[in-house]
Length: 76
Image: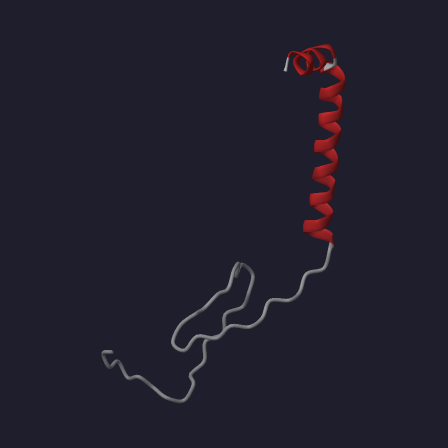
């Protein structure tokens, strides 16, 4: 354990430079993965009498239409 601690103490500058490089590369890979690769379009989900969402629905149009059978306010 003392040998490892001595190595880290002697090479702090180099290790911090390498660590910063690893963080920069990881951030670049995350950016490419998250924003530039095409993802599948979400599948449509329907719910009778309400809105159902599988995940994030920001910016998604919500269209509510009747299905023919009316409830007319009856209690379940």
